[in-house]
Length: 86
Image 1: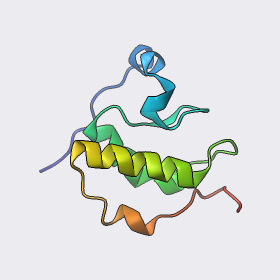
Image 2 (image 1 turned 90 degrees about the horizontal axis):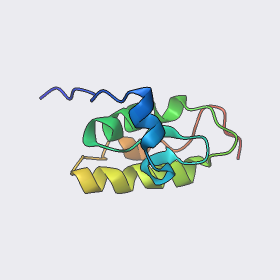
Image 3 (image 1 turned 60 degrees about the horizontal axis):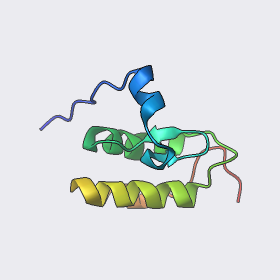
Image 4 (image 1 turned 135 degrees about the vertical axis):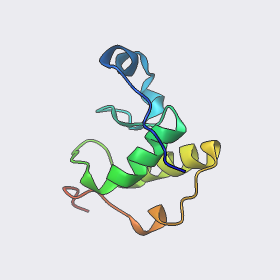
């Protein structure tokens, strides 16, 4: 089965509550549906943010994945953003 990313227009994206993002402060990686959660998992290590801690974003993505019944087995290997320094 191929997942199709649902269209999230700028208007719809702006209407999403901050809690619907893996990175709510800078509003990165929307988690509003299963397709966006899968996309967030795939792009997690590409995020560049100095205000969003990867552990928090990762936890939010895993929570959303469980909500939508998405397998997180491969995502468990990814731990941090490219630009984040611990």
